[in-house]
Length: 113
Length: 113
Image 1 (cartoon, rainbow over the protein chains, first blue to last red):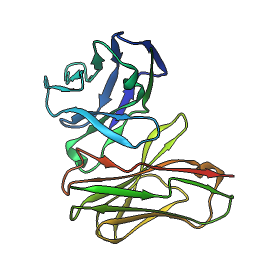
Image 2: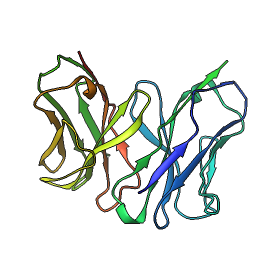
Image 3: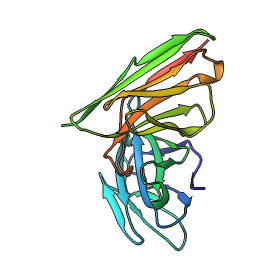
Image 4: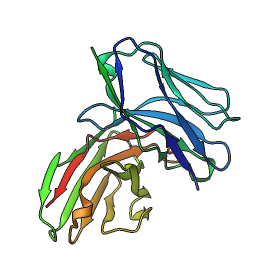
C-alpha cells in the first residue's frame, strides 16, 4: 500500500538557519505530493504541492521538488524564522484512491531567536 | 467562502462513557469528509472518510464509528471509550471527486481517563 516516511524530529534550529526535512514515499501509479503545516493549537493547512515529476512546489519561502527517480519530496527553506515553528507533514494522494491522503508521521520544527 | 466547524475543542471523558464529536462544513456542497486522529508519537491516521450521505468507509478497525446524516455534517461516535481513544481528532473536507487538498478543522483534544 501507499506509505510516506519522513525524518524523525524534533528539529531545532536558530533563526536564519537552513532547513531540510526529508520525505520519501511508496505508491502505486503517479501520486501527487504535498506538505502540510500545523501551527500550535491549530488544524493542518496545505503549505505546497506538486502533481508530477520534476515539479517544484513553493510557498512562504519553502520549496519541495518532486523527484520520481528517488521517490522523494524534501522540504527546504533557506532562512527560517521563529514563526515557522510548527509540525510539518508530508503526504501523498495516489491515482488509485484519489479521495484520501496518506500522511507521514510529522516532524516538529522549533526555531529559536 | 467555505468554513469548517468542529466541536468541542477539548473533552475529558471517563473510560466507558459515550462519545460524540461533530463537524459541519459551510459554503460547499457534496464534499468528501474525513476524520483523522493524531496520537502522540504516531502521526496522522485516517479513521473514516465519506463521499456522500450514509456512505462511510472505515480505514482502521477500532472502537469508533462515524455517521453522515446530512450532506455537510460528519459525526464521530463511540458507545464506550477506551484509554487508547485519547488523542487529537481532526475533521477535514475536500472537493468531491478529489482528495488532493484537504481543509482541516481546528481539532478536538480528547482525554480519556
